[in-house]
Image (cartoon, rainbow, N blue to C red; front, side):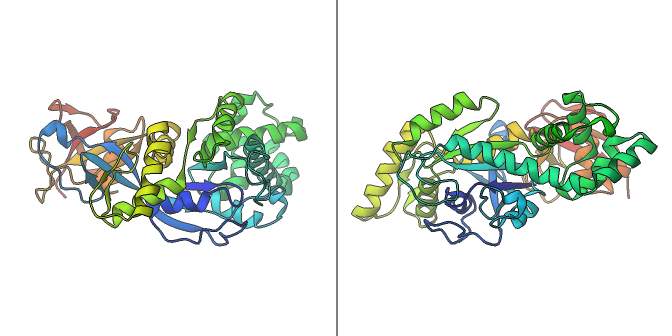
Length: 397
């Protein structure tokens, strides 16, 4: 599962990525530091169900720290976006091509207003971060529209013949990770005519806006909340964009905490609201860490980085965590590992979907499944729920 980290240059996007993955990337206070996309593994966090069993787990495809299961996902940090990127300005073409395979987007916004639309440093509070949200929406909308415009006459003519406008649009947008189902939902939501020949330019643009929202759900990470001008801007963003989940964030603080934890200086769980000192820290390190504790963790309850990843995964993409096991009583694998694997599945997924996710051939060998918490036998179309522990029963190979 791929989540794109997007935003204008110098908004803290690469710092957010580095904090999430601990992948070393170049970070600098200037535009276009990121040229080629950075890709790394981050983790979605969820309270592990091993505590319900009262025994420690033995993770294989994930991690478990202090009762928190960390489930891997992939983050992509793409080149910064500038106005008119859809026309190819800056690194726009590369940006759009890179991000379009993402299932969801985290838009990192400089909430302090200390960088302009191009990513250049300006007096803090002098730039309106709400404009950054609007311009990114606009750039993606026009990028999608530009791809449709290239062959719109052909799309219209073919749709007139086979009476399937969604299918014809889907063929043109197939490289953007936009499905035919996404397109149908957008057409229905906007109540657009079935005949594409009746769509005017405004209809096409409205369609592009709607299909973007459906196929690339986006969360706003209001970054640089450690700067005093950020709080009022954050409150204004909440009022102006009620349709978005907006998370107050300080990526720089999260990066510092994770590096300190990796070095053994502190004990810190990603997304936590506190940390404990473990090793010797010098005066400069202690001053910086204490500043984070009092000005970020105590004020906002976390740095916001892990919260942004979790909300994107669970709220926007509507994924659930499911644990497959072989022994329904001990909750172990065939090798004896307790709760070895945690899978992220779409909400509404069934027992047969889980079987297929574990191994493609399991779909054909599926007999039944068992809800290990209740002990009940469930069928192939039984819908799974968050934190289910499931045994798949198969026909012999």
